Image (tube, rainbow, N blue to C red; front, side, top):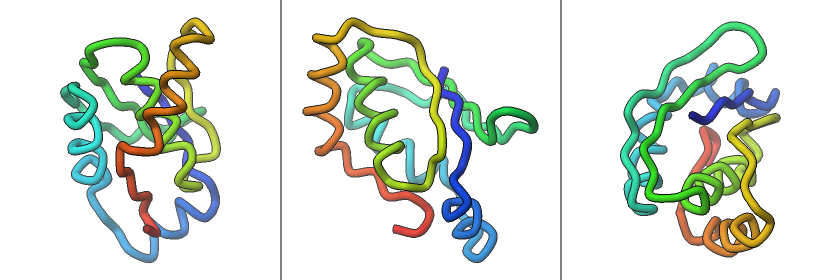
Length: 103
């Protein structure tokens, strides 16, 4: 599960140009060998909750890092992983091709 909150700019981009972000995110997840089970908006601490089935922690961390690096997200929550896997995820995140709502 990935929980995310949009940045002010990310939310502004969505209001000014409504779009299906699940359609943007699904191919990114699939490139990392995963499957998006659902993408839902939420009220409260997080704006979106995405349920994914990923091959390993590195793949989900890479997706989370790529989405976070887009600037559209102010916070993102996944689960903890060992530093070695985090480093591998950082290296993989650059190639996943996520474009945020303004991109």
